[in-house]
Image 1: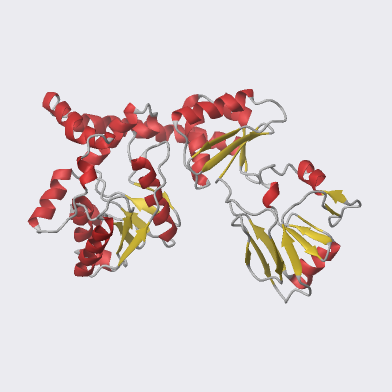
Image 2: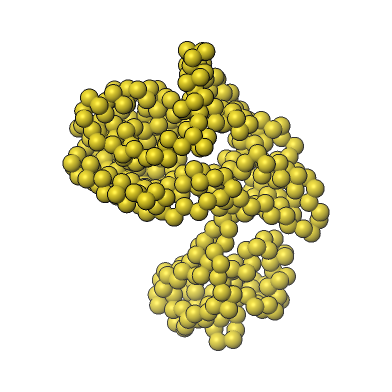
Length: 423
């Protein structure tokens, strides 16, 4: 196992440490390598708060890391069950929390092993996945500001358990792993043992098929990346719905997932994917169908697909005074200005209706409604665009349109002014 860990990518290392036997073996093995110590190896333990003993497990994780002289961060997360089930919700909450804590170029190292990979491929098969899913877990992928690395995908579970026993390492047993009502546990404890009784080489065969699917996926990637470049508009981050539908499914599905993942969003289920295709094909002019799943709002509007995180709820009547300091708005977006002190205090609020502005370089005063329509600002974004007033006069609409006075206040003397979207 240590040999598998020596061939590691460059960058700091962060171990995803549950305290179970697999991550315990991984952490102990890495902590024994001087090369890992030189890479500032640390651990992260996620307390999901689901089991009554989760706080005790977190403390045991801290103690084990302390014994190894490895820094340990404990993250507490709130798991919101969704239609995907508690397991999936906990996994999403865990990865989201860890992704936010990874530093630039840091590698999250996970203890997924050969048997986990076989279980994953079978799970994907039973859920009707295509080549990407049937290829199993990738050894590396991007995550937050860093990346994820699974160095033990060719290491059997039995070897990790033997390592734990040989070094007499303490580990945590999560009783939920015994619950065969959970799909993965049923596969692990009943289905795969039955397969091995009839087909002793079942694991090798499953993993060989996964390798073939992964190779096919990688070959298709060249084609759908070319298609993505043609149908994706970088300025709006939307994609052409008709051109997307015209692609064969083998290109259409991974292209959609790539588009969403690039924006930090989750891929849809098969049922949600079918709904997207139906709405993209049948949406009537002037409508904007919404397909929603955990953490994603996907719209069909003006012949294009648009995706975003669901907006944070906010008070439409909110307002505040602003002198140019970094200002976080109720929806999570931010106003910033860099330069000499702003010569006036502005009021920031959201749209109430009927506002008008004469943009720089425009001969006419325009209603915001007309500007939004002319420049194809999506309707779901309009309520959260900050409006900046000097007294009763509207001087700026986010960083989209400024009148002469707004330009003098916000960008005069070489100042830099911008509005960073929250989603």
